[in-house]
Length: 303
Image 1: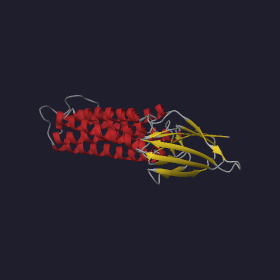
Image 2 (image 1 turned 90 degrees about the vertical axis):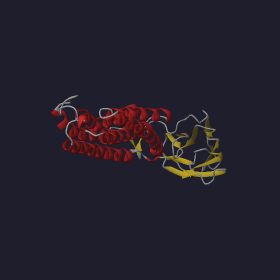
Image 3 (image 1 turned 180 degrees about the vertical axis):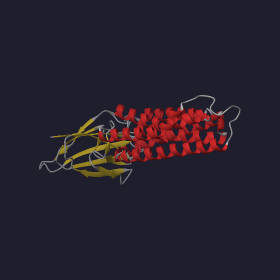
Image 4 (image 1 turned 45 degrees about the vertical axis):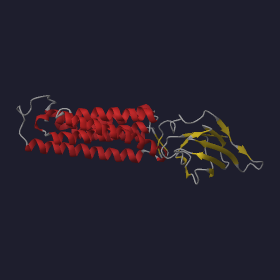
């Protein structure tokens, strides 16, 4: 499912910015270096940010950064190269920054539900693509062709250039609606795989202890130098859970956050015991992580 969601998000991004890049290729002889740099920077940044975000809520940390950076740099270079080398370089650097920021943003908002940010990025991307199209249009109207007759170079096709912006908007909106309503959306947001990178967690399962009255179950989770001593916590449905987090050197584990369980509790101390109370209401496996989604694990609820 996560691969489908990422593919759809990438397709929407490509469709939104393809008309802009096509316009750059068609009118490259009419565009100044400064305009080319602006286009390369905007395309690289937005494509990197959007792609990195989509990868961040789908993949682990390293692959998400790699995907966001590579796609953003390629898009920025492609948008700027027809105008000048400087514009291409500007696009590459913007794609690098956008990809890294987008991946981190995706990881940070995963536990809070990423759909609102998906919609915000879609609106910003559409607005940016429209603004760049208007910028190119104004530049072409104000400048004469440089070194060749207008229309020379790579011809995209007049019909495509006229229809592409409207088609891009419709298809992009349709793709995001499909992502939202096709079963990829879970309660409170998208459910894109397991929370947290898993690289800092030992592969240990811990079962909660239930008191004699059967009114409370307790389990302890220790964190030292950014490493949790258990990846999976096993608890029973319908019985209140008292989770004690023994924090020594938490690294970035600043709280227990699980959008699926409806729990969002920051640590009260980074050097001592933190008690968190919640009651699991349904069975299944539910992910938890810190606010940046770098360190986390799974709560398994059984009958």
